[in-house]
Image (tube, rainbow over all chains, first blue to last red):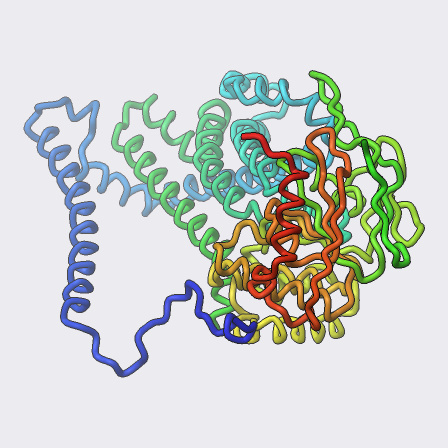
Length: 289
Length: 266
């Protein structure tokens, strides 16, 4: 077999049917079934939310549960509208959002930088390994009062959020770096690459999906850290609103803040998923165009 | 007893009484014991031996990835201390970077060494054309078959224009038919470009078909046990396929002699 013959073998490349040719009826059926399935899943998801809201509303109205304790959707909605009109809700949401995103970015950056340092310095890695494990296991919530005294009311929120989130990033990315394909590292060394080039050309690109996974784990923890920080010290933010609402026994306000928190975490998660698409697909998209 | 395997040609690569021990907390392991041999300019030498006999270690020493415990490894009379630009290494896996296109993978070496981009680009394109990957430059590795990937890996190695090639079982991940076709192609490329090459393999057929000389290694600790000069009465070896070579009685004799030296006990 000559080389040019081998070169013409298409290998495992899927070739789509040429344009203009009719798709078979079986394929069209399959496509329709796929669409139906997707619509069905979204409908079931919306249905679950609706059923939950209806049960909640009815249970409170019929006094199956004490509405003073549970509140109910229509009360939460009207409370939300009032808070929105005052501009109060927007203010608190904005404060929490800024704190969360700042802590998220800082803890991700810090975690990745520390993981790079541990990768570059194997001796430091050996020395610090037990401390990292213990540091990760310590319940950071226990540090809330200490951070409040050390950092003051504003900074302690960031301190707690970063302390809660940074370890998961560091550990996940660190493990990813350790598990980078040894043969790729060896290859770069045989081609004359420096340690810095091994990091930038192999280790970091090979671990893009690990870093994104660490970010996904981080975002929830950053939000937990911010809310707990706000419980202790804030004069604003959704955590403050929850504490304040429960102190004056306004469960509408508390539920309202929790709903907003749910929306925030959803939005942040979607944001990271988009980032993930961009990071992992950018090369393939560019090649196709 | 260790023998010092030599060559009549001018020596390109030389192992001079090289020993290597691995140190672990549980003890030290002598991997190579007083290995001496030379390889001449433009020679293709196969090294065969059982698993764990230190074949691949020889290549890592030549590539400057590890240092011998005693003795010297030299290229053109110069002791090896770090990865040399003269050396091209092909590993068992193709280790193509899945986030780079075939062309970008081919350009990895020049990029790492900071060579002129335009010249490297031209060279990479030429290599991919010659290796039958003309239409796959913008593809990603996962879109190629195993044989094509291995040829892309060869293009990546050749892009730095190494004068010495180290092949560490580069065909072992391929299926049988592709393996024969690719090893023929690569042997032809190495011969036509006048490279010096060392091929480490388990496959005696492959070793005999590709090389001018076969070195047999003993079990651990690795020593050079014997050498077999492969000298077929074929007018133009460059054009003889390994399947044709395998028909020759001389091929069979070489196979039998090497098999006997390998001293395989099951």
